[in-house]
Image (cartoon, rainbow, N blue to C red):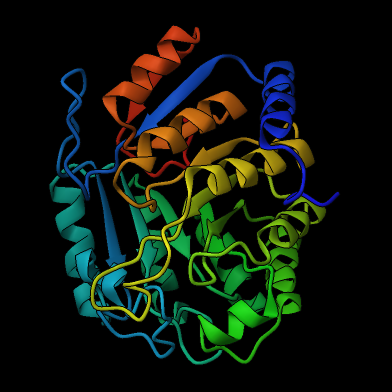
Length: 317
């Protein structure tokens, strides 16, 4: 199917009908505590969920859309001592869950090997543990499975040109498909992310990425949108439209009728934000991160039951 040429309303209607067939009218509002969230109805807490970077602010790739800006808000855990000190602080603060992330090496992987035993200790101490791996080696995937991590998060890119120009990475879409296959074969719960507009604000490869995710039988999916961050090469990139986000969400639902879909936290602020979230409701997503109060009211008017939590949107309960 040529997803870009089909009428958007037709895709949204079809996606909404499929969602009604497979899911209850229930929406999880995800509000991880890295960001303050207060709708007047619900307010999150600052210690419930945390993120740690095993590379600090360093990343070998210096991707055009990020330039390490995303790492700046994470707790630095780039040595075993810093990792363990951060873990102790999380436990002392009563933190429920943590995302272990970091910048990538030149091969597109996050250097996690030396931290696996400490990741396992976080699980032993009762935390929900999510790990961002980047492109993953089988040995690392196996070790993370043995550590008992709850989810593996990774971006899936569906165009070689985007991998080369945006990520500065000498890889192809085959490498991303292989990572999904490794995670599936090792029995890990992979939750791939698709970034709408990653190619300088334009759609390129998103639908191919969805096909890869479908073919590897991933059990969940998160869709986010490019955020042109100040100080990055994409600071002046074209803003992603609500319609493009809706088209990708609708295509994902049609391709994967029974797969839970979340609209994640990475999406630009501004006038299109409410429209993006309304389209997500119409397509029947299961979770939205930090939705506007107007979106919650819209969902309630559509008959949705609203549930709140302070974890990543990939965690649905």
